[in-house]
Length: 168
Image (cartoon, rainbow, N blue to C red; front, side, top):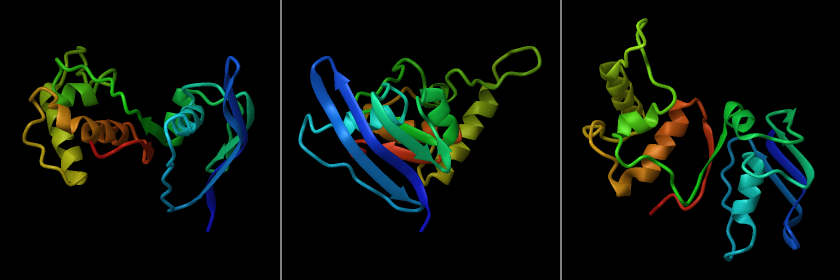
């Protein structure tokens, strides 16, 4: 099996607190891994380093054959890696489709929003993900946050996701 992700000698400190010390993680193509451990074990920190949310102090990250010495969020999203954080940041006053297309709205040649097209694309996306999409115009219900964030990641062409606490 081919290796798709290799994190070697990853270290990260916050002030005097060493959150990660010489961590290694290897993931093969098609494998599913779970990071488990007590609070403070470094699970979130490792994912934040991988996804470019926080810079690593030491170590190397290789994903899909490419090295990322100082990964950024944009680089990692473009590579296909995203992290659904436990504390979700959505705009509660927007609808599901508006959150999915946030900062990536579909506009016509006069820059007017193509709401019908965005709603239809959201329905199609949810159908592909095996979810009923009747409420794409409704406000974000809390119990659908995590599914909708997966849909946002999928919409943004990010196919490999590292998820934390998927089930509410």
